[in-house]
Image (cartoon, rainbow, N blue to C red; front, top):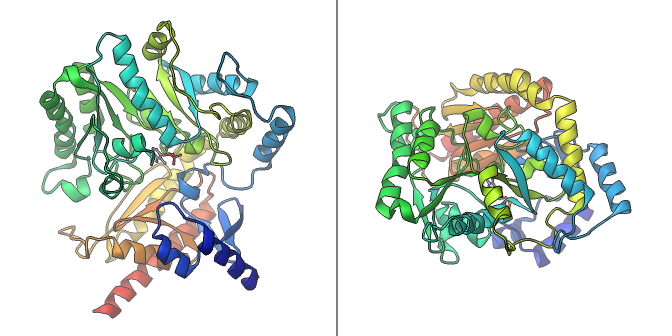
Length: 455
Ligand SMILES: *Cc1c(COP(=O)(O)O)cnc(C)c1O
């Protein structure tokens, strides 16, 4: 087994450039070859088992190994493996999925434009909001405002709308016409303000930016209901109502990027339901198919969909695989299971409160500055000093150390800087939550021990 794993690692190191990794270092180290998965567990080629507290990449909401999804894909493959949606065609799974999504989304959102990913969904947003305003007779309403440390994908438009400095540095981003405001990250940036005061302050940065640019030039504001990749940043309760007031006052479209929050992650169908956000557009992906096949889309509010339908010309945008029938069939089956097994209700009333309560048992650990969470999302802040919230090096070294030590305990966590991120499958049981929290505690202890041995 070990020998086979080494052969695969060598192939990978010789020929495969990976996303979001130092490829030189990875090639020397050898990638972890993940070979199978079941429920909340994955196994590598050397037979080691890990509890995947990250649901792949925030996406395996149903957990691994659901045969119904594999069967839905096989059925559709045999019936119609592919046909495009361009030139006045459609397919049955895409039409059914569009209807199902319209039923699940907030009442004023009844259309979807399909893509293959969250990044493509945000590229679609980029073009759709500008085209919408042009159709409305406001061609100058073009600027899209995002947030520092927001994440909206890795294509040119997605990375531009996002506010990741490391991404902007490579490739000369953002593209013109994108601006960023501060993030509602109270723990790192709130100083002595209360959470509610800070929430208002962070939201009012949007009003300042709109006034600076001129409302006649601003097309949209894009934000994740809860920032995911940025560090599971849960805005104070004052934030979203104030954002809502501002976008309404200045006639700016609100884009709620639901790629992580959608499909049950918060214990509601959408992050917009959790925070009571009235969005004009909702990019979706990830949990839409529980990651079993790639599919995404943009959910479109009625007033925008009607404007597009009345344009009297084509919207010159789309992808070869938009509404791919096999991906749509798998997404439909995923949504059917989420509904019929009442998985989101279970998260909201049972397992998410249990996860959050158990995680709080780690709050007294000397390394831990804060533990916060909503639904099946949680973050653990690692600090050198609990009271001043001072970090160790500020470069993410301690987070990376903790992540690597968690792996040794058989637990997959993600680190953003020195923030440990948890986002397990929605199907995780209480017993599995106990294992998750126990291993997370062991990883914290091991990290603490490693730091002490340095000094
Ligand atoms: C992952 C993510 C994206 C990008 O989705 P991809 O499928 O990786 O292109 C966009 N927005 C948010 C909020 C995400 O978390």
